[in-house]
Length: 242
Image (cartoon, rainbow, N blue to C red):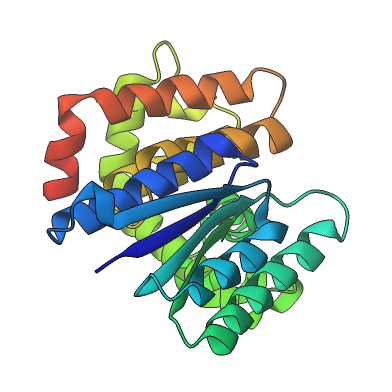
């Protein structure tokens, strides 16, 4: 039984972690390393072509495609995301071999941060804040459940998260942090400790990219340092298992 992982090199720190996560999953199911081949392509746009090519060889039970697309200020993000998703679906249809889509985007994180920011300022209950956000912002139907899950997960663990941030944000109290930095750290900590589907390195990188985009010049470095300390601390394992 053989499987193929097709991975995009672009945003390699994140996709590398996704590949490691997929390999760890196969290993946990008793498959030897030799039964899982990894094929690298330049970016997410090339994933469907290589996935279809690998699926058509007849050598693999399934193909796993992984990549990362970060949203910028142009429509390129939407075009690329749609092309990658539709292409991978067609690769499975045309080959008759299961092709899974492990392409992640930062859009849901971005929207979740906006909701958490709003809740931090208005002090509205999470459910009400989410409804208000959806009334005034266009959110794709397929993203709504994921954004809501991120917001609900973060707010439901807010006490534990804030305790950890207070401990590891050296020389910074929560009240002194910029609102955007505070909520990026909250979401990042939630993903590190309770978001079991997100590899830690991916969660930290997502948070750092958002901090660079929405914070000030030092936000990325600050967020990276705090989340890295939380990830490496023994308390992280205790918190996630409690």
